[in-house]
Amino acid sequence: MQYYSRETYIHLNGDFVKAAEAGADFFGQSLHYGYAAFEGLRAYSTHHGIRIFKAEEHFDRLKKSCDAINLPYQWDTPALITSTYELLSKNNLRAAYIRPLVFSGPNMHLTAASSSNIMIAAWEWGPYLGQNLLRVCISDVERPNPKSLPVDAKVSGQYVSSILATSDAIKRGFDEALLRDQEGYIAQASSENLFIEKDFKLYTPPLGNVFPGITRQTVIALCKELNIDIVEKKLTVADILSADSAFLCGTASEIIGIKEVDGIVYKEDWEHTIGASIQRKYKKLVLEEENYEVII
Ligand code: PMP
Image (tube, rainbow, N blue to C red; front, top):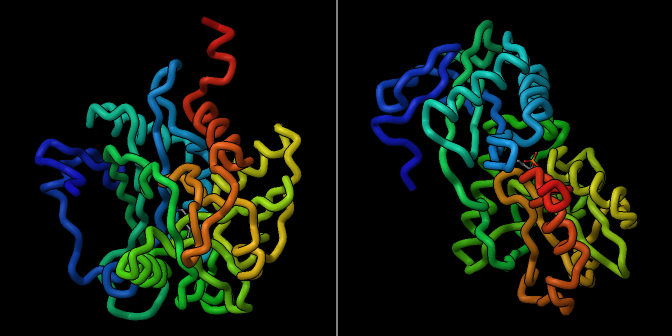
């Protein structure tokens, strides 16, 4: 996959520079130790123009992630949002995935950085896990322990375990991996939150050992709007395998149904699940299509 061309701009510390001409420092602490924080946002081409979905929440979470690891953060959310819209325009992008990254400079010590940089890139990217129902497996790789890393911060280093889990899943013929927390409950997928449906209710693991996904929060809000019972509860392997249906969610993958877990196929037809209703509703929300039919 080619993320940029010679014409692509990135935003770097307040300036727009060509991606192909910008360089990173080989002595950078972030490169060596994974000491960096990032975000993933999506812009949609809506009837009201280009809209970045929940931009404020994402940039606020970026600040929180940096604060959690004492990485200096000297930017404010409205200015970053304005720069991101400008970046989309400079790159002629309407629908795009957006990746802000805060990273530190050269430092080979294991000490907190005294300054940092921000880079924002954007590229066209379809749903991260595709559009077909997923075959997932339960990984032997566990989520990072919250006592060794702030797991609710989007910190670069912790994604090594996601890379291990997903690449092992793919090697074994699956699409994605579900990871246990350190107590043995199923927490989430490598970079998506998990919901299961059982007896017309939705269940999702509570915060604590899972990443506080903005899409997860959106799904919970949609359930409330649609009068769907949603329960935040620790989920066992047995809960996952005996569910009626399940889905993953995240900004990059949006809402995507799971067909089977470790070879056990969900019996309910996806199109008739609560997940499918949420998927349709989410699409309308991000495209700002709600009430559009009424307006035109
Ligand atoms: N879990 C992890 C580990 C993530 O990195 C992400 C974001 N890619 C998610 C879940 C989903 O979060 P969001 O809905 O905010 O994109």
